[in-house]
Length: 190
Image (cartoon, rainbow, N blue to C red; front, side):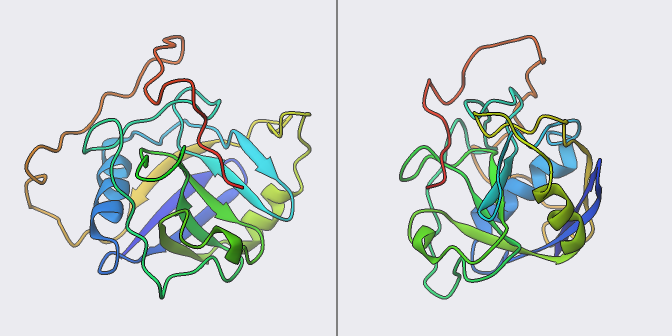
């Protein structure tokens, strides 16, 4: 199962660990299918660490899941931030996953147990490497915007199934709307 991100720097294909992290992967797939990620920016970039995206506000304070504002972690011991290209949920603390995620530029085992690892880049690591070279301001925001043009689900194990009970596709907020969904807390990866 995979999702591809068509970005301003090229295509990144992410293999999803849907058997190990079904709720997280279902959230990512449904948001991708709905166009939630289309047009969003990589709003945070720390060279030799991570790049972060998935926030419709573009500042780390927004986003919503199909399960509501947030949902629980799915920490799996055998899934680790043990290499470049690991894809994991950004959060503002335990059990605060929404729509934001990050991609690692190097192994980051100190993040294990803090963030749900739900995928790995299997094609397009050269694109991720190129993204890492973009200059940032003092707040770690890329000076030149890095955009997701489209998120495309390449294989959906839930195709044809209804959403889980209580789940719904969140509305993508208008860019000028500034109602914070996650509160004033930023999703932070440390």
